[in-house]
Image 1 (cartoon, rainbow, N blue to C red):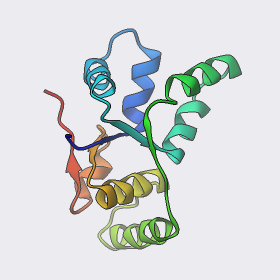
Image 2: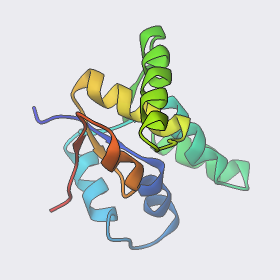
Image 3: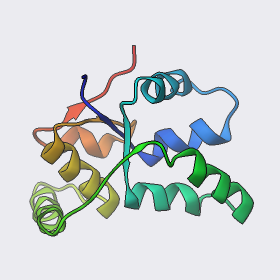
Image 4: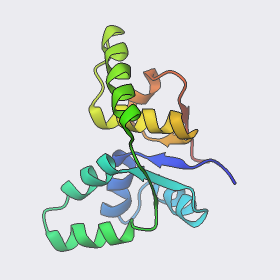
Length: 130
């Protein structure tokens, strides 16, 4: 099986909020191939974007079949370490990006994001839609 793809919030939001977006077809393909993945902090970010509980509940139920990768004790510590390394190099990454990068490296997943923060994270494989 091909590697899982951890999808960042900046890809999920237009997937749910726009009828058509450049990345929508890629996400649909990843869902059909059972390769789409997320982590809890990303799920929370997505759901926070909806003003109405009914919309958030619908999105949460739609995402229930997506691979949800857990963060473990060592991941939280590794995210802090990576964050310190990035700050020392002049890059201040949000915690959710650090968590996503750590889990992607741990589980050998690709990261699907348009966020330039991920360009500076070492040893991270990016998903490039075809």
